[in-house]
Length: 352
Image 1 (cartoon, helix red, strand yellow):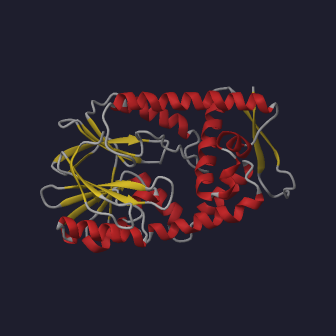
Image 2: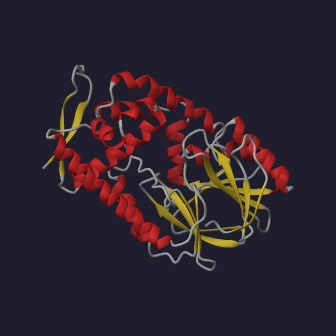
Image 3: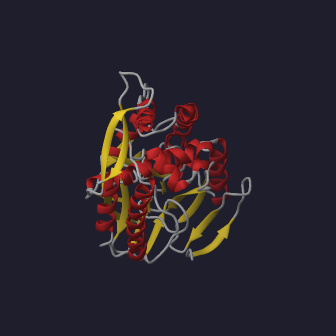
């Protein structure tokens, strides 16, 4: 159960609320336009002002959420002293520039996360085309490309404007805010350059999306990025398992205890997923593309939801690569059916 003293007001369009936690922080449930429903932003009081951790993505609804919450709490924009980001995904990073414009607060994130934010949404970005090309090579049908492109284009409005004053921090460093000096813990697999923030004195961990209760973080394969994001994620979990955590504050769902048990459950989930995919490959009896495997895992209904399909494809490719590197499956590259000579290979996987 989430630890809190009181749950106060109030609903903007029926979904958002803020919660005063027992440690004095405020958990703001910033709305999301997809199945997760909200992302947690944490407002930490401290000497010199408040720290906002992960303000959410930008939309008219999220702007109203922040305006209403701060007014209800009696906090002025200028009382926000810093904006701290665990990672660059739009549901965490998107409002950083908008909030900076109103508060004048610097934004802190890892150099890797900052680089990916510029690669994905900066002026003249080419990532959308690169991702779609990679997904097509892994079996995404041409008929689904327009919806995927529209989805990727729509994300750009959710991260505008990007922050101007950015201070990069990294694993192994310390950052003081909210009355504590936080150790920065690196984590890979979900997002390059992800940071968690750990205070050994209070045994509190701001873990972003690296460790979530109830749901599993998406493992995000991308072209020209970490070639083995699932392996990196499992390595990150093994390192985080050593932390003495009394209370963890995640990016989604509510704060939770039993941190070590949750880490073990996540490791077990991916082990089962890998074994299931090997079983599905055996059942197929022939080499399968990532798209074909994705449909076997998650169902053909994903064809109607480009957002969910994007994440399911990234997750599927990450697991197929792990199976390949573990010697369970082999990669087969040949011509995509109907492809021009100039196009890249058609990638499938087969049991060894």
